[in-house]
Each structure stands twice: as C-alpha cells, then as structure tokens.
Amino acid sequence: MAKRAFLAVTMLLPLFGAGVTIAARPAAATTVEQSIVDFAASQAGAPYCFGGGGIHGPSAATISPPNPGCGSGAKGYDCMSLAQYAVYQATGIVLPSNGTQPAGVGTFIPPGNLPYTGDLLPGDVVFWGGTIDRYNHSGIYAGNGEVWDAFDNGYPVAEHSFSFLEHSYNYDGAMRYRGGAPSSPTGHGYDLVGSDGGVFVFGGGFYGSLPGLGVDVDDITGIVPTAADDGYWLVGADGGVFAFNAPFVDSLPGIGVDVDDIAGIVPTLDDRGYFLVGRDGGVFSFNAPFENSLPGLGVHVDDIAGIAATADDLGYWLVGSDGSVYAFGDAGYFGGAPAGAVAITSTRDGGGYWVVGADGAVSAFGDARSYGDLPSVGVAADDIVGIVVSPDGRGYNLIGRDGGVFSFGDAANLGSLPGLGVHVDDVVGAVPT
Image (cartoon, rainbow, N blue to C red):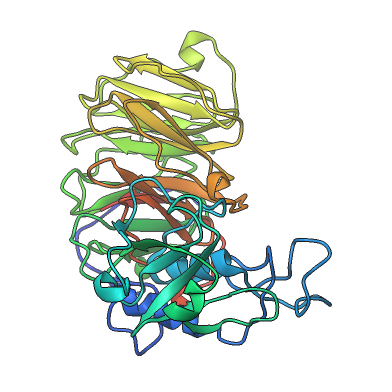
C-alpha cells in the first residue's frame, strides 16, 4: 500500500449517514420500556431451559441432565436469561447472571402496598422470592398486572399474572432500566472506526470517513475526537494521520519516518497536537510535549496496545498487551492489569485510568471506578477492542470487534452495529462524543 502523508477533511461526506442513534427494535415500540416488553414477548413459546439463553437469544440448557422440554438440544431460557435478553436488546445493558444488580444502573421500585403494581411501568424487571440482589425468579412487567417470564419446567415463555406468581413467591420489587433511550443527550454517544477508516456514528456528529472519500486502506488502528467533539483524527499503522474537521499537524510518512506498528493516537487538550505510539513503545509527538519513550529508556517490548494522556498533556501512560502500564512525565503509576489488555483510557482529572482486556475485563486504577465488566456478568468474549467512558466517569461502554456495545454504570447505549443488522469484524477503536 502506498504511503500517505495526511488527509485533512472539513466537509461532510456521509458513509452510512450521520446520527445513527438507536439499535433496531420492534416496529411497534415507542419507548425503551415498551421495547423491553416487546423483546420479551417476541420469545413467547420458547421452552424453559435452566441455564439456557442469554443476551443474544435462546440456547440449549447448560445444566445436565436438562429439564423436561429442553432436551435434545432444544433452545430456550430460564427466568434470568429472558430478562437479560429483553433488557440487553432494548438498552444494551448487561444484567448479571448471578442474581445481583449491576452497579450504578437502574432505578429501584420498592414493593409498596398491595396490589404492588401501582408504581410499575411496562418494561420494569420484577423480582421474586428473596431480595432484589438475591432473588429466585424474575420477569418483565407487561402492564395490567401481567408479567412475561420463563416460569419453570414445563412452562414455556408466556405471560403470567401477579396473582399467579404470588402463589409461589414473595414479591421483592422491580428495577427500571432505561439505558440508551432515544432522548439521550448529545455528548453521550460514541464513534466506532474500522480498519478501512469507515466511521460509524452513534449519537454524535459525522465528519467523514475514508471509504466515503474513496481512500482505500486497511490498516487504521485508532480514532480520537477533538476536545469539542466537533471532529476526529484517524491514524494508520504507518503513522499516517487523517484529520476530519480537526487540525492536521503532521504525520510520520510526512516527515519521512517509515514504520508499520503504530498502535494508537491521543490528542493534546487544545487540539493543536497529538501523540502517536508504536507497539515498541516509541512515542512520536506532533506539537505535543515529548516525555520520553520505552526505547529511549532501553526497554524492549513489541506489544504496546494503547496510549492515554494526562489532563495537562505533560504525561502519558502506555499499556502493553501483557497488562503492563508505563507512566511518563507527570502521569502517576497506579498499577498494572491482567494479560490480554487492548486499551487504556484516563479519568478526566488524570488521577487514574481504566484498562480493558479482549475478554471485556475492566481494571480500574487510581480514582477510576469499576462499574462491572463482561466476566462479572457471565458474558464470554474475546474480541473487545476499546472502552468509551461516559462524560461523568460513572460508567463506560465496551466495544467489540463486530461493533457490539456493552454498557455499564450510567453509560448510554445508543445502539450497535449488530443491532442495526450491520455485519463487520474489523472495528479497531471507539471514542466518546
């Protein structure tokens, strides 16, 4: 592939169209809450399979021997997995599989007085037989005293009344998960980028893409937004920088530097410069303060996966795929992560950072806080490529190579590529908008 020096773009050239805001939902749904109900109802008749089902749909029972009605490889749900499926499909929120609530997500609706349903809305997840964090049964409130659930052996997914369920369980209360409602404010979205420079926008502004310009590449490794979220830069493995409604400073091909291992880019706070990092930990500063590098320190690695800058641009962190974190300048060292790291991002004040692994494990250091991760909710993955922290730092979205989005804490889920029926396997990075 021919080397390129730069590309600066200020006009809008839509690829998929700007402003994709929500995941595909049943056509009749007008709110996130009703969408949760519709997704639960769409599984009517699926068999009860203890240990089966999950956020992506029904599956065979994982408990041996399987219960009656779910043998011979039949696919279905138990009570928790049906709730997981409906909530995730409508909001992107991943509910834990261990009978607890995700930290910082949802509003608790206490049981109140008989008949209990006065404070409920369709789409609320109702819990029975214990406490809100140690329950034995769950379902999706459908309105009018009815609940969609996978009740027990011999009961396929169906509607049951509150009075029916009260014969078996005490009512514990409900949780209301709004997730990525269409009304989520600007500034809470995210952009995804593919290795071909295709940009997918969820909730923010679209400023162009490489396929939209007829530029043919396959080595884009990162994307970063401007401070005002009114543009972005893409970087290639050769250090070529593509600026979309963002200041172009220079690039490695532009200064005659020949590399093929650039792993990430991070801008300065004033948008007048940026740092590039190579897999060997080499740091290239363009109108940005250089604070040394691993080769400069005589450290030899070949697995650096990302870079994050401090709040004053006078330091930065590098993370290796083995979880090692290297701090330069005024960046504080707060600890290393498990092996498998793919990205690092810092807190707004620079007093901490999050490291995410390919399996969706999130490690929080310093003043960064953990709001859960994929292993903690029983979701197996091996293709997570990035983390997008919400504006207040109280949640984050994890991004998969297929453009799947998993939301934790107060992070808004505005949709995903699989949710839109878009099938890719080359998403390499994501940024907040």
